[in-house]
Length: 372
Ligand code: SF4
Image 1 (cartoon, rainbow, N blue to C red):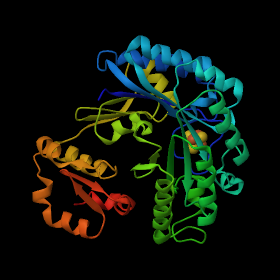
Image 2: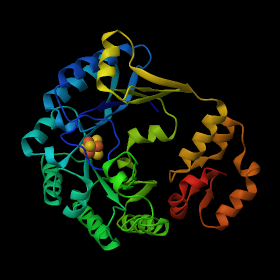
Image 3: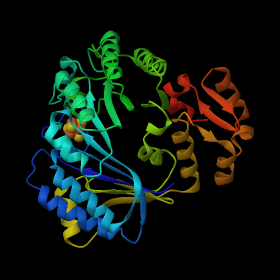
Image 4: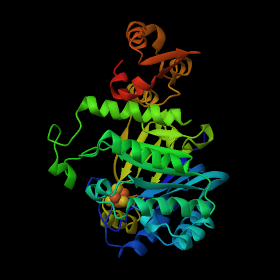
């Protein structure tokens, strides 16, 4: 597989109450940011050559005018070899997607939209601090289709304080009515430093306990698989194999990726590095002719092996034990025979054609599977 490129656009109109991604709400830095981003691209020209996926995330990339996104994609094409059939994804906020903007986006080369809907329930959206309503989200989805996008992903969040199963199932029904190519269903994580995290703590009223979280996960998986979707990763569902995110796959199987922009992470061979989570620090370093890297780490073979195990067991494809043995010199099926047999008896994993893969119930507890 070819490497992928990720661009972090660090701007949002307002901050959602649960968000801990790096972004700022003022857009005064947009021109300086773009200039820095183009310079940062050039710094990696000799380290990366060819890409077959581009993911423009953030932040809210859809706050940028289509002309900026078009120029960004052209610059990538001029700096690197972006293959002609590349998957080019834009993360978009429903509040930004009107017909005029979508028509302009179609001309940029973007061929996949990932829309941050999160819910169709206005009470949930208000609690999350989203800047759109459920009706606006549905309109944005329809307008995207009308504009000609035929690969649309919808992001949804569950286990929101006060949300019951009935409300969540209704949101899933509304998403299914649209027949999206891809669905990501994330369980809300209450990061302590976010406004929601400060208000709610595990165990307080209104928050689902672990049993309830498990129930949400299983019912989501059952409902979407019954509707024909493939539950191909803990939080991700595709209408068929072609619509599984090619870009995200790279994060799960150690394919190299280059991340540009503040807070973006990169990975190549056994090295991972990440940029400053600060726009001024990012711009400053680039002005000084330095890569804006905050920190880097070199992973040992043991760390790579453990990561491959935990990432692989978060995907339906699982781990090919022959490939794993060739790469990490561990014969899982022999050396972990007893624990794997226990997991299999417990209905958490399957072994087929030499691959160890999680079942639906295994995906629900994927973090603990990696401890084998
Ligand atoms: S739009 Fe996305 S990145 Fe921006 S604040 Fe909300 S969750 Fe965070």
